[in-house]
Image: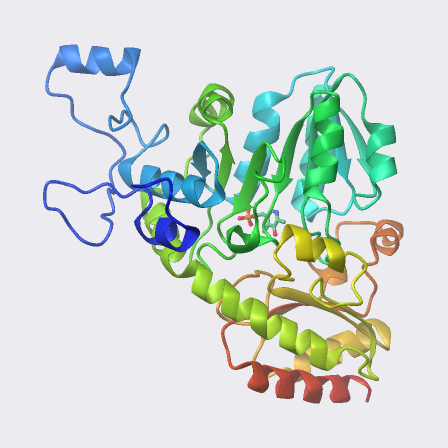
Length: 396
Ligand SMILES: *Cc1c(COP(=O)(O)O)cnc(C)c1O
């Protein structure tokens, strides 16, 4: 494996481990444990295990290691720890490093479960959390304190697709010695250079673009060797959030095609957003790749101009019109995943963000007419025709 490889090469060959059979495709080591040659070897391995020595699948497994090393190489991180889901990764990254009395600053526009960890779980164990508008650098600066241990944000928020300036927030956070933890799902490993831009820790739900075909849950925490092996691994291996070897294999194979899939999806999303912008049935078309998006300049800098694979449509007529739109679609399915080969339409106010109060939803711009559309691998023209027809139906 070569560190000079570009992302596309890393995604196909990174982290590969071949057995004695020299198989071409990565093997699934569907085993919980490993046999020691003798008692002395078992003893030695429990004292210190080498990079290719395993003890128990909750601690590590060869197929899981392939996924960890491949995604770490892709993301430009030193190491990675794979987890059972994206939420196990978010929880693991935060909980492994925080203790009672610590202060955290977080963006307030968060995926519901991320918000639950910060608002309900960490605070229960004596961690103080300050929420800020993630796009407001002055608000970050005002909230950061000498005892701030971590900052947390989604680099592109769900479902209103605000883009947060990783480099600028990292600079402010590093000035008080805080660790920058970025949930990077919407930016995707294909377009992100979060670590290069200043993030210390990057977290993904692999359930989204990494699998990309809606088959399995998974997650990963990427960071320095010190943070991953010294802080995250002890927490994860004793609390049981390990990724299964079978799911790790799905993710390893997903990484091989991820760049092709995500680029195609992002190109379709851009095309659809451009065509829909200004449509008479829409209050707003939210897509970071649109020139009219408030952070489009940042998208050029931070994401090479790519707006991602998700767009949000605010349909005139509120919930009734949004439901009529959803029910009229024939290609996108009504569900709540994203980054999938199949286009997926979601009504956040009644599903993923139902738990929030109406006031919180208003504050985040999650209106009753808002639809989140994850653009899949179908023909962009077919999708557009279907969406335009459903928009007409939505207006009665
Ligand atoms: C989906 C998602 C998660 C959670 O991932 P799971 O794999 O479903 O646990 C966390 N953060 C963001 C931004 C997500 O989109």
